[in-house]
Length: 241
Ligand SMILES: [Zn+2]
Ligand SMILES: [Zn+2]
Image (cartoon, rainbow, N blue to C red; front, side, top):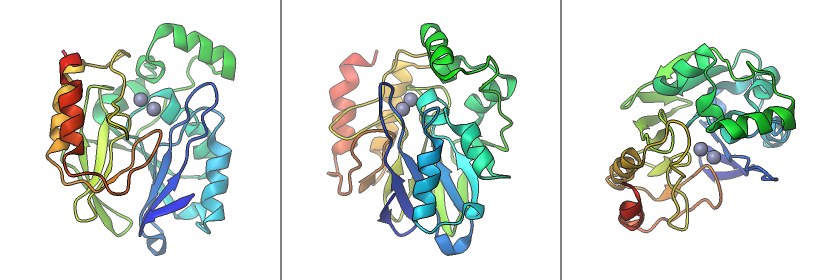
């Protein structure tokens, strides 16, 4: 785990034959009110717990897990993390919280063929992705957590209830899989995806002042060029119809 900024920590995903999402820990450690953003692929919980402990953070200080979205590579090890951090809450955008609560896992696996493969590979039970959600997030929510304020921005397109977390004074954006480094964007062919919505979400992110981009995979970017998101949106626009 490395420190990106005061109150923002990064744990790199450990990709194998499937990707494992990055994890971010946000909040002032002294606040005892930390949040974990995404958890990663099934089986990838223990090294994240180890990374957090190595930073000297007590697991009891982690109060909630916030999902940028609920694809398997981000939520797969949620039950491992919940076991390691008793009482930790789960916060998800309403549009992905409702399927999670009813056990509708189409959004987790993204496509049917993948579901069968993952259930075999990881020995997952049919109801492996049924979770109680403690807070259903909405666009525009201001989260005062860990001595910081993060804004929730609903950015559908890659998934139905995808969100970005944005810190306006630090100019930090955590966009999940909607936009990455190197002018890449998230795929838009899975269950709940929508190319037109993704285009609108990219243009919405383009309005923000962002210095630090902390995506779900690949490189993190600490000094983003001012027109980066706009350029990326323009580049992809012809494909997002
Ligand atoms: Zn995703
Ligand atoms: Zn991902």
